[in-house]
Amino acid sequence: MFNTSHRRLSVVTSLAAAVFFGDAATATPAQAPTMLRGANVSGGDFGKVPGTYGTDYIYPSKAEVDYYADRGFTALRVPIRWERVQHGLYGELDSLGDGTGDFDRIKQVVEWITDRGMTAVLDLHEYGGRTVDGTAVKVGSDALPASALADLWVRLAKPFKDNDRVWLGLMNEPEGIAPADWKATAQSVTDAIRAAGIRNRLLVPGTDYTGAHSWITSGNAAQMAAFVDPANNFAFDVHQYLDTDSSGTHGDCVAGAGSRLDEFIAWAKAAPGRRGFLGEFAGGDPALPGQAQCAIELPALLDAAESSGVFDGWTAWGGGLWWEPSYIFRLEPPDLSAADTDYMEMLKRYVD
Image (cartoon, rainbow, N blue to C red; front, side, top):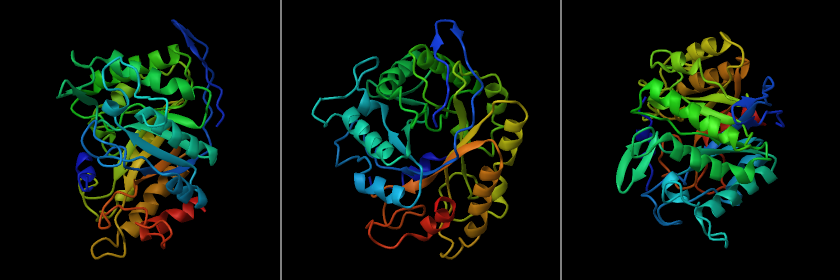
């Protein structure tokens, strides 16, 4: 899965969860939350880092939040960048106290989302690493130990620790990291979050872009079978596109692609407590030449997730006002008061 490519097309419940104390946890079995149906609203993942707000990147506006809430969506996944919210490892978050720091803006978006009764999914959109001193490095390396990622999440999540409507996406589509190494990182970060008294639902990805279609063959299934959340309040975050190579770089949908969740669903059902969250998926506009199959495959994918009994919800890819009008997965119209896109019309039957 090569989902980094589809980014480059851009112009620029209340749950009873135990708190982890030291080496002991009193976790109760997690109940499946109400099925969330939402969208990714891009902008915070755009541009160079750290970049300039409003020029290189943007966060969802209140009008965008209202657009989705008014249509019945119950979750928004909001991409953020590590380098922007925490400039230096183990440092304070970017908060100026006047609403203009990066973390201040993130908190405002979360407030808008949760005030409308929706769940905000904080998505650390970094593919398993970040830049350190101008060099791109992966989590788990000497330059970027897992403790640095844990420190970020503890700082990020503490203000939301009593809000069940804020979910934490540990990392978007890790890649270039061995499955065993990524599992060890995800485990240590989770343990640190719970040790800090943070009980929000966690979304835990696998490596190799966390593709559902390759969950078994990538080695994620074998490693994540041993993953344990001390608070027992998590789901595995998987992504699935419908084009030839599951990359999300083409608008066409392959016949039968709607069944690409099947192996993950079977794996999740094989042991108690395994939950899933479909954090990204998309299909092209079936009204366009060569993309008619998407009208079959995208509903098949969502129907599989909805009826599986293991998925906690889904967030479709392609929201955000900064996408080019021609972007193959554009979910919003350029003018929010205009008619909904054909893609949005396909999703609305699930959220109306």
